[in-house]
Length: 232
Image (cartoon, rainbow, N blue to C red; front, side, top):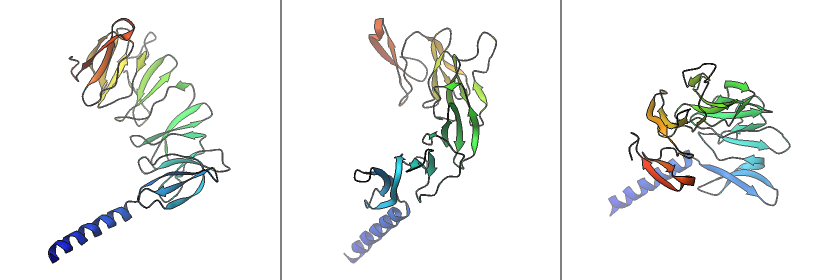
């Protein structure tokens, strides 16, 4: 019995040590003051004071916030320390180690040190967060993929007739749906078309747990699933 008590005590002590060293915070909104702070999810204790008008969830160790009386957004760590960055009007949550930032009509990306890896650039639209190492964006009429150095990666063939994909999705499980002049297909992270661009549909899903949903028929009245080889 004594040994069992010692084991239970040791387990509880280890659990407490883990909880206290790995504090988890979530946004807390005070209706009285109409401000956000951050509370510990385990104890419910307010850890970071009520001082934010915008307060996002912590992602990759950082949360996006806007402090009361300020116009710009920025990132903080779980101690409330501000990540040193330039001034941005809007920042997105970190995804795959990168965060989208905006100023006026320009969009760029920073890494977790606050360095602007992809400089702010105007005239790009529908910019998506990084997944599997790539970000998706629309330049004029076409969709293209950028790696984490900002290099335009896919497609790798350019001409005055063809610049990018007419439609595309972000990567999911290592594959991305893309549409060209033939139809929809899927590329892998090397840009290789691994599922041929012969799928004729208005809607195609990302891969989840190895399967993707394809709609077909009049007004997308029917659907079917395909695997990573494109087989039903």
